[in-house]
Structures are given as C-alpha cells and as structure tokens.
Length: 454
Length: 147
Image (cartoon, rainbow over all chains, first blue to last red; front, side, top):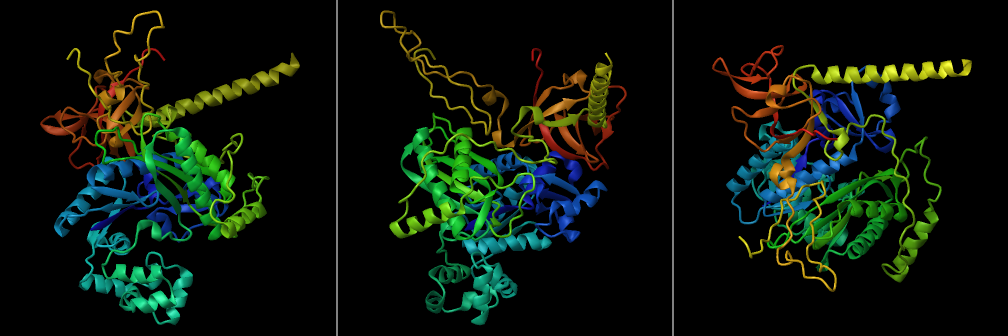
C-alpha cells in the first residue's frame, strides 16, 4: 500500500499552531513581497476569495479585522515540514516527500486493516505532536492514493483517512464522478484532448485501451490508466505535475560528506530543475534543498535536513536558483555526516507570463531571458550540460518585503512564542512594550525639537 | 568503563547546530608526550540529548508573567515544551484556553483536575466544562542568570 499524507491548508495551519487565536478565523497567507494570496484557510475560501487575489484588494477587509492576512514565513513552514517528514520517517518503513506539505509513505507488507489503523494513528499523532491537521489517502498506487487523499479531505465521514482498493464499489463510484482533469498528471490541455476522445471521467480513462492511449497520447498516460486499475507502475519522479513543483534529486555513487561534492551535485540538480522550470514557462518563488544520509546504515549517524530559501521575486534564472541552493546548503551541511542523496525542489511556481510585478522590488537588473533561452537551446542541441554555470559571485541580499510576517517561532531565539502564566499576561506585556516604545519615541522627538533651539 | 571507548551518537536536533566535538587526537608537539586522552573517543556532553527527548515534537517558548514563580518559572524564562508527552497530574502544561496560550500546573483542586498557578490573584481554573486544549508539556525551564 502507498499512502499520501497531505496537510490541510499547510501554510495557514503552521501559523495556527503558534497563534491559536487564528483558529476558526479566515486567514490568508501572501506570496513573497506581499503580492497576492497563495494559501487560504477554509473560512477564507468560504468568503469566495480566490487564490491569487492581489493583497491590496483585501486591505480594507484586513484593516477592519474581518480577515487576517500574513506574509509568508518560509522559515517556519520549512521547519514544520521537516518535522513532519521526520515524524513519518520514524513511523513508516519508507517515505518520500513530494512537496512541502505532501509526503508519500510506503507500507509494503502491511495488511489493509493495519494500513488503515496506521493512517488513523498517524493523523492523530501529527495533530497532537505537531498541531497540524492532515488527511491520509491510502491505495495500491500513487495515482489512487492522491485521489483517496482528495476524498478524505472532501468527505467528512472518512474522518481524514480514506483507503481505496484497486477494485471495488467505492473506487468505481469515486472514479465515475471524478473528472479526468483531476487525475494526477492529467493537465488541463490533456483533459481537453481526452474529452474529444470521449474520455470525461477518471473511470473512462481507467477503462480505455492501454495500447490506444499509448499510441494516441503517451506512455505516461497509459501508465496512469493502469495505476487507476490498481497496478503500480509510476515512479514518483515520472510525473512532475506542471505548475506545482519541480524536483531533481539523485543518490550519490559513493556516500560523501564533502561540502564541495555535495554542492556540485546540488548545482547540477539546480541547473536541471531551472531548465525544467523554463521548459514549462514557470517561475519559482522558493527553493528547497534537502540531503539524506543512508537510513539503512544503522551504524552511522543519521541526518535528514532540509532548508527552504524564499526568492525575493519569482525567478527562473539559473543563477538566482544556484545562489539560493548555496545558501540552503550552507545552512544544513554538517561535515560529520555521509550523505547518500541530495536534491533541489522548486516550489510555489507561478506562470512566467502572468506573474505580478512587484512595485518595490523591480525584477533584478541582471535578468537575461535571452541568456537563459540560449543556454537551454545549446544544451538541447548539443546535449545536457554542454554549458553549465560556474560558481556564482558574491551573495545577493535576500531582502524580502514581509510586513505581516509572523515570528519565526522555531528557527530564531528572539522570536519564540510568548506564553502567559495567567490570562492577559501576554497582552499586558505587549502593551507595556508598546508604551515603552512610544515613550522613547516621544523622548527622541522632544530631544530633536529641543536641539535646534539650543 | 575505563579503557574502553564508547561510540555515542547524540539524538539530532532538527535545526540547532550540535556543539562542536572536542578532538583529543592531535599530538602535543613533536617533542612532547602523546596526549593521554588519545585513546578515548571524544563525546562532549550535549545539552540537547538531555533536555530534548523528541526533537521533532519539541518547541521552545518564552514565559511571560509572574504567576508561576512558585514553580520556578520567571518572566522571560525559556521553556522546553514537548508535545509528545502524555500529560499527568503534577506536570506543567502549555494549554490553550479561549484563544490564549497559558502555562499552568495540572493538578487536583478540591478533588477535581484544575489548571493551577501559584499566585493568589489567579484562582485555579477548572478543566471540567472548559474548552481547554493541550498544547504541550513543559519538560524543562531554563533560567539564565547571566545573559
């Protein structure tokens, strides 16, 4: 069995762990530089505020206190995601993070009942130990697990854990009411083409002739149809869903602890990821770097770090991504571990044509679309890696606009959550702090006023 | 055990950098004696291994207010909060009550479980019939005398 553990409204849920007063309130998280809404709580969705709404349109609602808008706090999300991955790693034989808030778990050799019990237990543990609400989809294949997870989220009677068999009435009923476009790996354009061939639901796709699909469309689609029948045949990396995330990772031939070697591998992955990014016409808002030691070597110290670096404006420039990767690696690399695997993930992708330009942070002057296009073209014609990037120079300033960012509760000592020993203690302390600041402010301005006279 | 070297792997903190290990492996100059500690594998004590039993579920918070001073929690103290511990009577809890997060001692008062503090101004809060939710259990308090 394969399970997909997916956090509900991950960014908002992370914020709520440390700010419980946001529970039950409409909360949105904004993109870098506070451009537009990129994550919404269920309450905000209920207000019919669509994804990608520019933040300035919601300013009125925010000021009246009807909704809460927060700047994205990637350090917090990255840390909570790492904790989630570690918790699953401790409980399951094998896991594979798919994105910042989705992790596949592999439960080979478990019976159906055991899988379901484990799913329920994991859901409770994650809620209790990390404070995150998650849903778990269990099925024999990746594609079905993804659908099962969706069902677990939509239908409250599953209580967050849904197990789908390859065959069965539930599966059939579900597939019949799932539009083919919602199947993992079937994009909008492909769905349109399928509709011409009279394939409208996931069930239609499942019942289609595999050879016909392969001839008419692609091997990947034929495999997707097989997966819907419950036959696992897709590797996780085979389906990079467009416009969500791009991952490149590989195991090292020899485990290594050398900074330079790990860095080199990551640079290769970063360049490949950036190419894929431009191929699909997207830009990334954040870059995640992760390293794995060999978990089967119980005798060696284990370390599975990851770092998330937000970009100050969405970018598809290899050099920007390389710089972010270097920063990320410097944060997490520890020389005494021997790493088995390293990877780069590009997150929170936006369409390159549609993305909103920031007023305060104009796109960096050194952005060269033609340069990147030329490099890609040469690499396509002459083979992967004909042109690659040398070491980038001095680090750019990664200054972000984040007026409403919550504290980085888990990664900065001076931004920890404040907890009162009695009701009102925190509020009183904050009021005191503010009064002090105001006093200092008036003192300073009085001084300034007094000076010219003297 | 003298003469025997331990191989000791500290539980890894998620984000904090472990303390650097001392290395006694160098020799004390070409004309001196070899270090007598040479045969002992270096394993500096790491506070993380002592205070953090579940690194994924451990969070740090700062205490605010004076009503837990009787239990040794002062304004500005650092609390090590473990969300993986089952709360028992006598534990000091971080709990959510009416949208606010509070530090209280979980104990019996007049025979029923209450959230208690040590300050006479703040009476025990009964748990029965309240919407109190557990956030975590305080494993340790760190009070820094010199900052």
